[in-house]
Image (cartoon, rainbow, N blue to C red):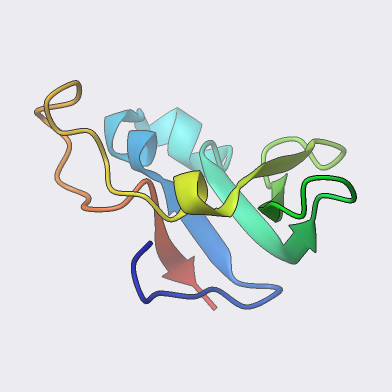
Length: 90
């Protein structure tokens, strides 16, 4: 995992944000607010918890290593963003 971090309240964008139309950007597609890091109660795996800005009641959790990982540029060769999620604004 990279030595990067996000704080609760930070707004991040998923790499697919690059593919959006102006209308989808206006709807905050692929933008998320960081809630924080949780720990799975049984496996102790660290999870990033975040909320979609395009659908307020949609809260997600993703393994922290996956959340912080680089974009698979073999699968998505046209994406310029380096990481799966990057800071959009604080």
